[in-house]
Length: 130
Image (cartoon, rainbow, N blue to C red):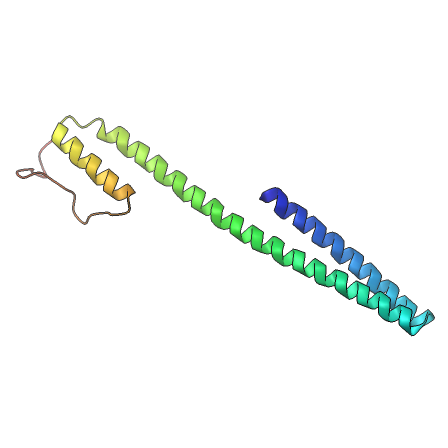
């Protein structure tokens, strides 16, 4: 998509340059030429400028979409990194029950359902060593 955006931008700059040149020729013809040739040339320049504006708009829209996708990829990468770190830490827990509770909490967090308090088993003490 980045290559398409770059191509669209280059094409729009090219169309804008061509449109500007055609309009410039139309202005010159207005001073030295006939009215029909001037009108036709100016119309062609205006059309080329309109096409350039369309390409600029599409290029900007594509760039915005890509920026949003890149941010989504960054967020997903961060969640993946945190999940890996969390899994590595959970593997260090000696108590199978506490390890299972932490795994459940991690799965719920990754599923987007973060609980307000950590799941525990009856009789768990917050000061009990893991």
